[in-house]
Amino acid sequence: MAYYYDGKDWRLLEGATDQYSIDLAIQPFVGNKDFKIWVPNNFDNKFRGRITLRQGLEASRNLASISLVTRVGPTLVADVAHRAGIKRGLEAVPSIGLGTSLVVPLEMASSFSTFANGGIHAEPFGVLKVTDNKGRVLEEAVPEEMENFSPQLSYVLVNMMKGVVQRGTGAYASRLRRPIAGKTGTSQDSKDMWFIGMTPDLTATAWMGYDDMRSLTMKDWTGGGTVVPWWTEIMETVLKDQPVRDFPVPDGIVFVTVDQETGKLALPTCKKRILEAFVKGTEPKEFCDVAH
Image (cartoon, rainbow, N blue to C red; front, side, top):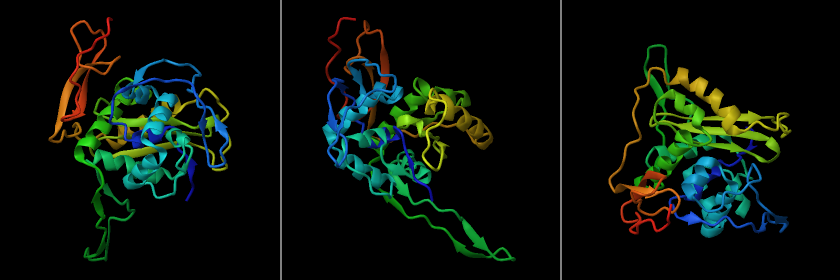
């Protein structure tokens, strides 16, 4: 079984439910256990200033992830990843937010499925059942299920990842014309490119790279621009006969129209507004106070 660097897909697993704005200040971080100085950057080496976590997730902005990891702590991120379905030990350092740990594609699909399944993790298996020549069932898989996250937290994460397809780096997948949530990933030096996408019924991981960790020759390739298109082509066939339905909204979720810039309740004068999902009781109470 091969392990690969997962690019930026850990952003799903950072507990990114607090959609407050964050200040993307440039600062060095201790990036690994050898205490080497690591200075994170965005893929395009540009900075957008103050953005919300949703905007950071949708546009795959590295510094948004790093800022969140430093707030909640890398140990918590590693614990969430484990509860979601990642079995391999992860190094609990700030760079975990950019996918610097080796993972298995199957486990990435399994962990994303946990949130699509309302926080219930089911161990993946390869054989549904075994029958004899008379059709009698000799053995049948019964997946072990554990509710590791609340349905409300899980829905907020899925709702944020729907934005990756609606407006962000996974936009190519929107041509399937059905609700899809997902996350793209491009590892450092273009050694790996990813897209993990999911519908309410199916999660699929697409990975591109070499087993020997060589960099891909085309430096301008990315998970969103290169992997998402062929993930989409495959899923067009897989989902052809599947009914179109949206992710179910659990009790305890409220939708509020907020200003994208501030994350506060939107006013009629706010130019960029979005209908945002919140766990009931965590929605913003203050109105936007920025002159647009």
